[in-house]
Image 1: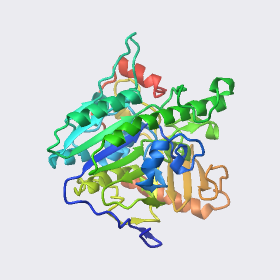
Image 2: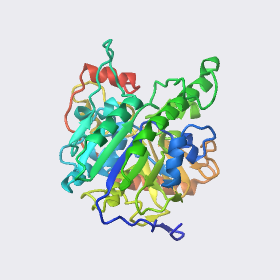
Image 3: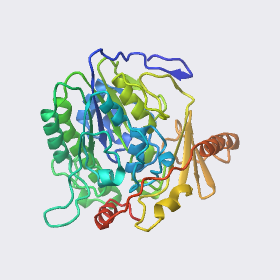
Length: 424
């Protein structure tokens, strides 16, 4: 691995002279430690594990906010969600905030996206800007109930159609997003990595088994897409956030910032990029600059993240993250009222130390020795806690609270978001 003790630089990336196709391949609610390449003992992700053998795998990547809309807004704009008003789901990206997709479009790329989560619908999120095709056309099931998610097999079918129908005279940028690991979890008949009849077990065993089944199903559906990509294609694989499976007494995501909810997989396979593993401290805001860098394109003005394969990354880098809860309620003026609202929880990680702030309390963990965050060391290491709290306070002062673009949730939006667990 290239680099020195205090700075990481992956020196093996040489972007080919010909235009490179670039794919953002993402999975909703996928915690890193549920992939085999991240150490999970069950066979949940054989296809992604094979992908990892030819990729640069980032062992330590965290999301900015453990919610779908805010997390992807951070990735596509390389700005912290609070800066652009996208603190929760159901908030829309302001029209004056540039995205990496528009940069690809300006460079002549054919841009298309296949979506699968209601919170990412163009009307709600505004994340369709710059895409020539933004396929989010899923609405109701045949019997009239809201269809809040599109299943992985359907995502793959549409993605393969768009790849086949594209203008081959132009390079392409694609975002393909899968949502199956998101609750409610289903036990897929042919995808049962635990090899158990989940209905026979208590909930604390049944729920994780169903989650693993959804992960395995998604992995199988991703394989045909990876196989169909041209050779001169760079692929960045990532999740928006993770999922707590009863750790710390919590099931789900969006209201806590323990590692199961914020530690996300990040892998990059690209022409000219040497495969390997790195513990460089990465974050969701780095996805945008990295995707652009893979195509030899410059950052968009205002981007705060780093090109992880083209810039030096200090190993002492501090990463701040926070959460505000699920979705904005359908109340007039609610979005404006949220502009200056304090987060439910904030945290920071630096050189293995993690501080979590909530309800005027603080928890301090040393992740290398305590990955499960079971031993609070705030009392025994007050100096370390104070140093990290100062980082958060400085970040707070420097990071403004933006206002999202006006948009009203309709009855279908409310029903869909409630089915996904985002209406409190």
